[in-house]
Image (tube, rainbow over all chains, first blue to last red; front, side):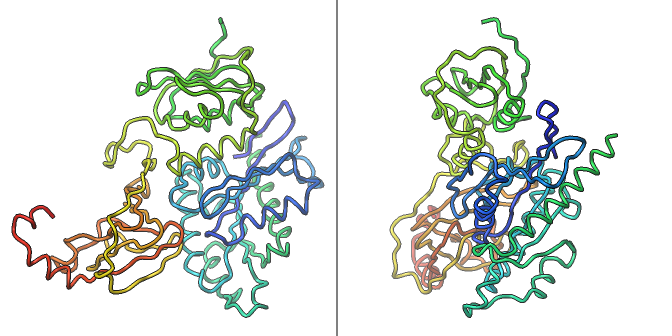
Length: 204
Length: 244
């Protein structure tokens, strides 16, 4: 749910990176933080949640224009998937405007990807959000490992596993190298902002 | 003091995290006062231009006090707008305070203060209980016939499924989770030496698991020799069986 700050003439929205443990969510955000430094406002908050760290920072995408004369500020988060972090997940997912699902291309993580996606659907449902309606992009991460002889799932298989019903934009990536990270975020931003514009249009 | 109360409510509608975010994005200055019927002294959070500057509870001050307030799951709050004269002891950014505080709450490092309920009918917030880690007695390897490894998030046993064997946790931590109408409710966290499964699993064939067991981090479990356990169980006296 995008927040409109009339004092600062700013629209604040939230994009969350979700996915199974160690799929590369934090790597994605760390890359964005470094590579797009001039778009970042303030410091990166890093919390030592067990398994996956929770990351947060403010991102100001310029060059995308204003919505209703207001600048857009994006809060980027990763959220830990472990069962115990329900309060953290609640704070982060409540009012989320866009999601990037980072899937692990390793064959051994196939089931984990699907369970995590199911989890996301469940968590969103608890806040009255349908996974079919929210701006969502799926990233197939760790593609670079193919060159190291580690068994990866094919893009076709991953599309079938994860995107058969959702039919959202997907991107191949190697977050550790930075490949595909920017493209994934850009598409998610685009979809999120389009959704926000629609919401404000209805309010007219 | 004469400061005006501009916002008041109940923690089961908006949590402390929600209120701090609200006051934060509003850039408010003033004092948040929180009362809980489970605590004698009220808690205070002093906010300057949206950022928590100081806090106090009966025995704590500063960030420690603020963190402990995340554990107050039930209570009423009032925000009085006005100048804050207390010293600025808290310097962390608002988001870091919130995310770290909730992490500590989820990890069980902050004591939850409120009613404790496990049954579905009373569970109004659907929150997970504060779980201490329970370790079992020393593992007697003579009973372990096989070892299995699980990684983080794996389901070791699933509620409703049938399983006739008993495991003992060799390494790592497991979470015993039951499905409720509000989602999964964690019942127990078990560590090394604790057992998964019960005497019922080898007495009656095909009993359904009463809860799911999930791995937290990497876990090694040992499969116990149910046959041998059953033989030993049949050999003990009736009184002893009544105890088990």
